Amino acid sequence: MDNSTSSEKVRADEQRRRGCEVARALPKQLLIGGRWVDARSGKTFETIEPATEQVVAAVAEGGVEDIDEAVRAARAAFDDGPWPRMRPHQRTRYLFKLAELIEAHHEELATLITLDNGKPLAEARAEVSRTAEVFVYYAGWTTKIYGETHPSEPALFNYTLREPLGVCGQIIPWNGPLSMIGWKVGPALACGNTVVLKPAEQTPLPALRFGQFVLEAGLPEGVVNIVTGFGPTAGAALARHPDVDKVAFTGSTEVGREILRASVPDLKRVSLELGGKSPNIIFADAELGPSVAGAAFGIFRNQGQICSAGSRIFVQREIYDEFARRLTQTAEGIRLGDPFQTETTMGPLISAEQYERVLGYCEAGRRDGAKVETGGERGGQSKGYFVKPTVFVDVDNSMRIAREEIFGPVASLIPFTDERDAALQGNETIYGLAAAIWTRDVSRVHRLARALKAGTVWVNCYNIIDPVSPFGGYKQSGIGRELGKDSLDLYTQVKSVFIKL
Ligand code: NAI
Ligand code: MG
Image 1 (cartoon, rainbow, N blue to C red):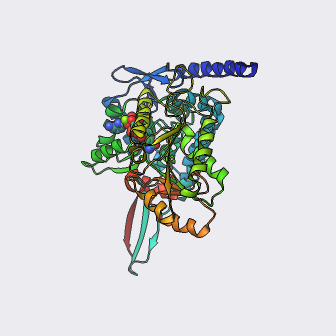
Image 2 (cartoon, rainbow, N blue to C red):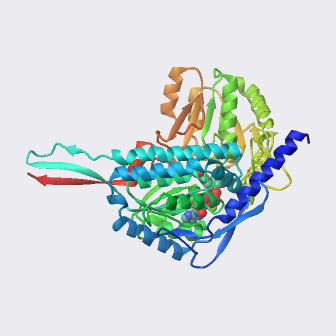
Image 3 (cartoon, helix red, strand yellow):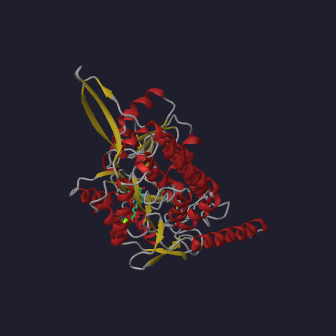
């Protein structure tokens, strides 16, 4: 090891040590009704750093009773508190304040994200910036939530009010532990709702720090409640609670179905952002360099743990071998290792469970006759849940690795003949979150953008997400659209008022 890398290791370890100190100073409590309180059971659980398998900190284990109390606080804040009744301008200020606090603690939050999730620090930093932007975006909406007037009878005046839904139960995953707070809490608050947030058990730390910002920003008590805990207990209790008006969930399609089922008795509003198996379609006329880089970015960023990951890479026959060679080269250039070190470009998977799952899929791919060009095995340091960036060739769209969401750094390269074949194979999935096309043919772009059954289509780019634009799934990738103007539909309901003149 040369001097520069050993001094980089010292720096990385120092950042990790300071991060652990911050994590241990966080409340081992739940944020309910504007105060930090112990879990009723008194239980705590540990959060593990995926890069080292070391315990970072213990946090409170919220359960059914705690959810009940948090919902009660959110209910009171909605029914009797100032939040839905205040001037929208004032809500704007609170949302700006949250954005400011996130920006003001940028490096600290990035450190907590990397500790808890394992993504490289550069990606964690980008997540912090994007989350602040999402709050800024929704701060602007509070004053722009309009009703309409309708041309009814001359002797009548009819208008609509767009009103908040009430208490929103928000259950989020671990792959974007801070950004998912922005996507959920931002629009809910902008529209005048109150919130009970249940972060993923793998990544509670950024949510606890955010809870401190909620208090520092001076939000009225009970507007944002945060209950750390597990899915089948705290999550399920929130999903079925009769006093919750709406549940917003991001995670697996399997749990999404359970959440929808739990909504039936009270006909709760539900929005779901679920799995994907997104086609990334590369035509022979595309610029090779950018399309290879884009395909790598699409499947390897965040270790492939992104719902919209471009996991099925369709490559036109003429360039299939050349593309496979170039993508393999790119994958082999990825620096897998300590996510706190600057030169690292890929970190570990989130947990032992995901590690086993992803390696299991690599095994299944081999068994089904696909060929590993690179990866397909453990990598990185001796501790931690590291899987090498993996490229499979000779993949058929009917193989398990091409049908099921792997949620890891595993690319499946599938050949196609022409535009029609690309659309057909691309759509041959139960999912429909995203799709991408790489080509220089403008007409083909427009035809395929319409033909692909996906909530987002990227052209000559991948994974561009901007709060101005709606994001969500066709088919089994979900229900509803987050971000953009469309997200307001998820957090408001419309009342029609008739007045006899
Ligand atoms: P998961 O869907 O079980 O967990 C996501 C969130 O739901 C967590 O907060 C969890 O505590 C909660 N949850 C779990 N079971 C619940 C229940 N019965 N009721 C209410 N809430 C519940 O996802 P998991 O187990 O972490 O990952 C499994 C697979 O899910 C991944 O391999 C991936 O395919 C997919 N996934 C997709 C994500 C996306 O962004 N669309 C994010 C995370 C996982
Ligand atoms: Mg699960």
